[in-house]
Structures are given as C-alpha cells and as structure tokens.
Image: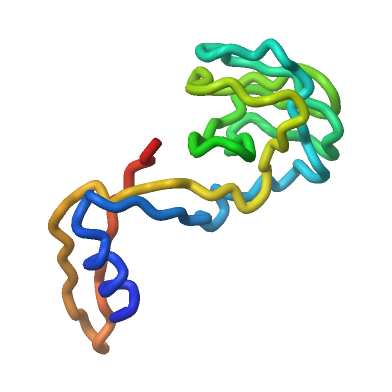
Length: 137
C-alpha cells in the first residue's frame, strides 16, 4: 500500500496528471489488429470517423483513443471492419489520416479529483483506500 500512497501524495493533490491503463475498461474484448483513421477531413466536433485495417469488432461501450491525442472516446455503436466508427464525446482535435486507433491497453490521462486523500486500516491490517480520478485533457 505504501508505494501507492506515496505516488498519490507526490501528485500534489489534483495538480499533476498521470496515465493509467484501467483493468477491463482499457481493453476491448472483441477488437484486434491495427485500426487506423482513413479520413483526412475529420473535424473538431465530429462524432464519427472512417476507420479501417482493424480486426474483430470495436463494440459499443469500448474505449479507444487516437495515437497522437490524450482524449479517450467511447464507441456508441459496433464497428466490424472498414467503415464509420460512431463515438462520444465529439472530437476535441482532428486526428490525421492513417493515425493509429488504440483499442487495447488504452491509457487514460487523469488527475486526482480531490486534493485530500484518506485511508484507514481495517481488520487483519488491510488498508482501505479509495481514489477518485478525473480525465485530464
């Protein structure tokens, strides 16, 4: 526990950001391969983009991000093979054509939501510690 506590303490409350790959949420159970953006005209505010070269299916609810971006998006409809990938929230920055779409081990850039962190020592000397994170983009 102490290395986790020390790391969170070193973040200076909600001042610093870090990346984390979340268990289950950062991994698509159905998408594979090297998905890429196949569209040069994507614009800030779009909620769909043409993708190709992937394997399997990016399923509704899967998290993904574009390789050169910090923002993580969630698919709002299934996409199997080449075609339009629907997502939320709207694009904050337009990806480049042929930019990789990360669908596995998606890293979230986050910060601690609260400046104060607390823990308690329970039965059997097990630590109880809850961390609230917020995406930082």
